[in-house]
Image (cartoon, rainbow, N blue to C red; front, side, top):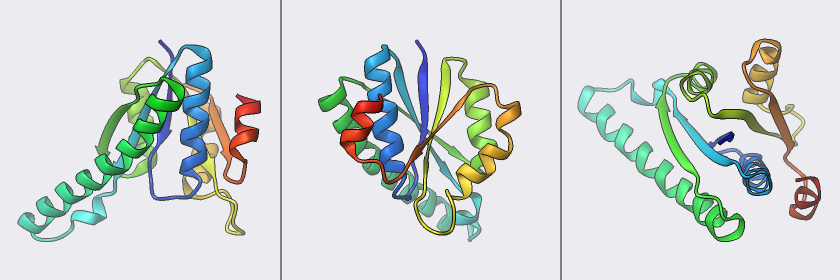
Amino acid sequence: MRKFLVVLDDSRECLNAMRFAAMRAARSGGGVEILSVIPPEEFNHWIGVGDIMREEARDRIHAHFEVFAKWMRDKQGIDPELVIREGEPVPEILAQIKDDPDIGVLVLGAGTGNKGPGPLVTQMTKNAGTLPVPITIVPGDLSKERLEEIT
């Protein structure tokens, strides 16, 4: 089964990327894999404190994931998978794509502010020509209705 890989982070544009991935998966018989990457700088403290912070980050990710997962299950009939990795986002996304051959599309949300589409979209599109899967970039300001029309 082809999976849509979508990145879970704290950005506003993440919401439209999640919606798009779930809608496309539901309409094409695919699945959704949600990847959250914990950056290493969060744990540059004493070992005990770093371990506590890592566990708190994982708890926040699981709580955030459950909100999206409930919507995907209830509205789209999709039961997403959660993958949590630690490291720098771009290398970890690439590693996840390499590690899971069922991933067929990377879905990213583009920011709408005057700072550009966001650091993840900017970095991933620089590598777009050599990626093993296509990237779908979802505009952050698309309405739910427009997303439904597109998918």
